[in-house]
Amino acid sequence: MLLAAGGSAGLANLERLFNSETQPETATAYLLAAALVSDLRQRHGAAVPGAIVDRVAHGAGFAEAFAAETGETPDEAAARAWQVYRRWTSWIPVVTSAISLWIGILVLAVVAFLATLRKRWQRRRQWDQQDVGAADTPP
Image (cartoon, rainbow, N blue to C red; front, side, top):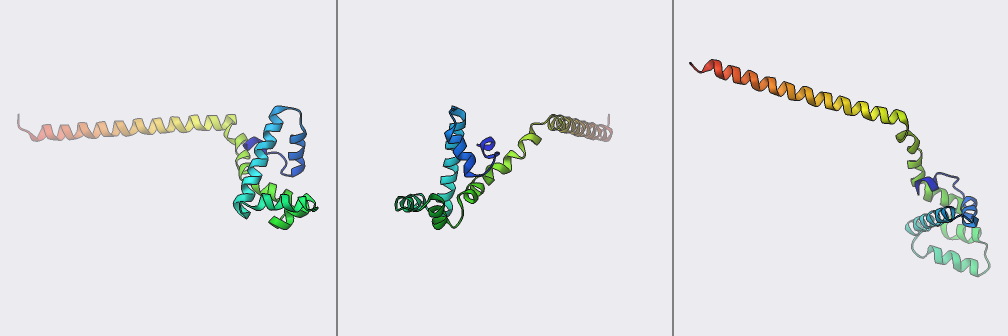
């Protein structure tokens, strides 16, 4: 879904995906359409898809019926619905890059080094306490 929403936001792209003869593109179209309908139902109520279909059945154009029921164009609604997913797609190249991998390795190395220093510090403190205790007890 993240990768599918990363493309162009308009319904023209969705129509192109639905008209494709390849299964992955058709599946992507269904995912994007489901996300759009879900967002419409959440923002405008569960009856909105049916109200749009009813207006189209009575002779209105789809874009006109959509705008009358939602107050926005279909492309605006699609952009808003897919915006959540597009936010994450901008981070995918950053997270999966080689430099991110090396930064992660470096962070792990620093954490391991600090943990080792802490253990050494605790062990030396324990030895110092044992030395003080041994010096206080008479032989």
